[in-house]
Image (cartoon, rainbow over all chains, first blue to last red; front, side, top):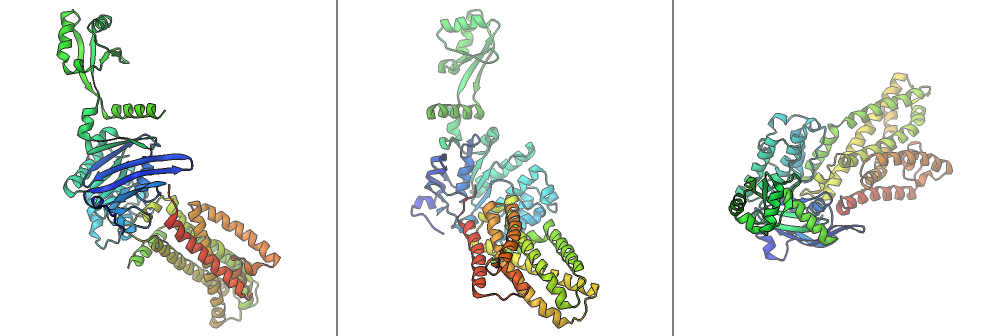
Length: 317
Length: 233
């Protein structure tokens, strides 16, 4: 196994990407991506289709070679020849299996590929992923959700230190989503497993990850901790009344700027209005236009994500 | 131990597949049909002499298919990545596949010979003894081994084209080209016709052996190199 000369890569940092770029012909799929993921951390990868998430994951798995830059994982350089690294890394890039073989047989193939002598590892992941009722079923006869569970079971069979998961909760029902979320949280919190996860299910991702990275057109446009993200979410004040025209006149006279939402309600983005909505309520009551609706709304992750990629799109244009 | 574990995996994939039973059916029905069409042979030597050219061509197609399928199905099932991102050298994974292909093909060759010998007995081919049949069996098995050697190229084609359909198409083209090559008198220098000519009693020269060895090495080394160095989008 090749070990990086940089000590910090071998210690607290589980995944380290340094100026990684990947082009297919003239098309730059990933551009100058630099990122560090600490051990035990769960990082979520967000991005539209074609943003470069899957290309990045394939480079992390050595299925693609970076055009430039370097990738280290658990202190080792990621390279197609560095096969020993995969003793410590599990992945789910897409749920794949041998369709004619049963769940147990598929897991046994993965166990043998990992050179694990312990046959109990199969029973353990079957139990962890709740596949007991399906263990003798041919993989092709599984539901989409159970195929996904089989993929996760294969990824977790060898108790990896790093899990790389591309859309792991696709096709799962709501109860299964919660179950898998709790399983991944347990792996991270109690066993120190580092998890890099990409998903389109933004709200679900926000319940799971410690950090979030947003990719857009091959670039990492945002990389922040979830508690920082909460501070970055835009707040706005939604306002409505019986006479919207009168409300607009009062707001203009008092120096508030506003916009009209699609449903006709007024949206105020000013800090003073959001910080002290009661003052605005008082003012409207005093002027004979008491509000019928007044609420401070925090942007959701989806809204934040769309705002970020719109901003990045404008900058790149 | 490492290699045995991988061989076990590959054998299980083949043994549990529908393709295994389809191949068994094909190599029962087609040799029987070929044998029945040659039922007028006077003795065992004549019987096998009539059959072996056709059987050789059948083995060329069959062995190309097994080689292409064992590698190509990893692409059609999208399981290739499951084999690449594992803590075993890629050369071991490729070697395990080739060993299992060789075992499967050997089984097919023995089974095919048994079918045509059994058909000859039922048809009533006369004048034979066990030693006569064994005298024919050894060159048949040697030719089968040479066909396995050139079939490594089908494995390479399966990897290059990321599936098993293209190499099957290429094999049929090769069979057609082989007929032309033999007609032109260059059969001893074309990898896919050399084993069939050996079956029909031709003497192989040194260049034929070099051509066979080079083809086998190209197929094997090319496949290992592909697994080690190719990118997988």
